[in-house]
Length: 200
Image 1 (tube, one colour):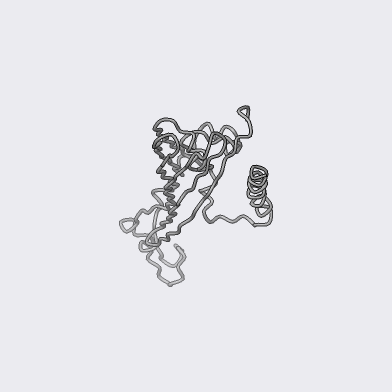
Image 2: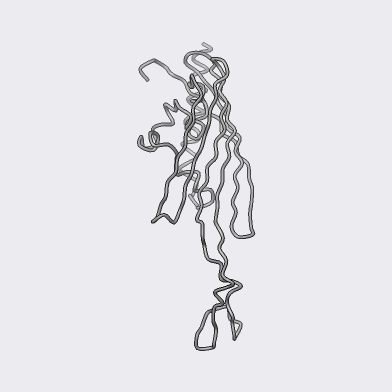
């Protein structure tokens, strides 16, 4: 009876977020967190969450970290849109005994070298628009560069309950910086993995 109750609870916890995902309108805040990490998981098209058996499990399903039998390191670098956008990921995981695993991960998406011309504009009529007919001009010596950066740092832990069930959790710190502005937030993820048979 207890086993059946546990399976029912796991089923409900798994299905409930799927129903919410259809009702939430997607926007761009934190969108860099949805890109994904690791060649193998990205090649599986999202199916990796179900098996999550290496260090990238910290990103997809933290309970999968419990399957690590030895320390693992993952590094990834991706350049997008003609090398305009840099996407970097690093993670290290260490198993402690046969039941516990801890991991640390960092993720960065950035556009570097954006020109800041706000102080370089000599605006004769004060309208904020560069117009050569009114003797507006740019002072190129005052042009600066800045970066738009999104960061995510994960602290992860997983525990193997038995041969079939493992649980895990992430604590995330998310940071966005653009010019002199920045914001920080926190988040949490929890996950569970149950292997009904060895074939799954």
